Length: 373
Image (cartoon, rainbow, N blue to C red; front, side):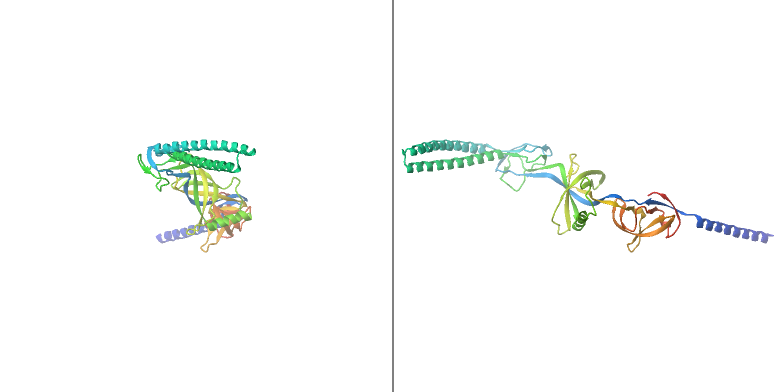
């Protein structure tokens, strides 16, 4: 009796598994794989380049004395904002005042002498018309006049030089900006055009950012603009920068110019952009990350990176759905832009490209698709 029960259970289990396999095979033959697709359309695509850069001051000035003398007063505190023409140091001006007063008096003396000789010359010219003086006497007065005029000019030059040196006793800021620390103290002897700076003034209300790009990439960019493959952005070449450790801080500026000499060591060109910096967040010497909008590809096709299948040999494929069937298509791609790749060849406008579920696909398989990324 037990033998019959065991046999019955065995045949029941075999029949049950057989039915289940049949049902699974039936389902696998009729169920379609669900995928998500995007429908390609032509549109203008702004292309960007990711570059590294460093911040440079908009203006900076090293302050040096233009005369020799003793520092009498320091007229600023380090770190404060100063205006163009604001005094920073006062050099002892007493010897320069004395020189100024002396040359002024000397100039006035020679002016008076010149005026007397000029009057004499005018009188002699009138007398010569009536032959009251000889030609030789007139020539002698003309010589006196020329000498007096030369003395007047020399004294004027000495006076203006003394005046200028007196003005130089007040060391002024040549630009608006933030003044640094002082490298000299009261009582220090400074000399004209010395190597050591007294202090420096830096204007960071605006800043430059110098970006590094390979000369080869720059040449290709210029060629694409020239042959019409790329077009200049409507608002010009915009640049965005962020601090290396803070991608939430983003500032937008404008492309200024590029150098015309390639760095022989790196093979790079320097591109310069300018930024408003009233908040003084960007400081000279900082390293920043930059994105530059360098052109627009008009009526371009682009596909998400999630659609791409890469093979070890470097070829790239996508799956295209047509009439419910997935087909494997080889594509040639250009550069990537914000997670999308520009299509060079292999696809056309209106193609439905699989972006999700492609791992389950093979060429010619039936699929059920919905729109998505």
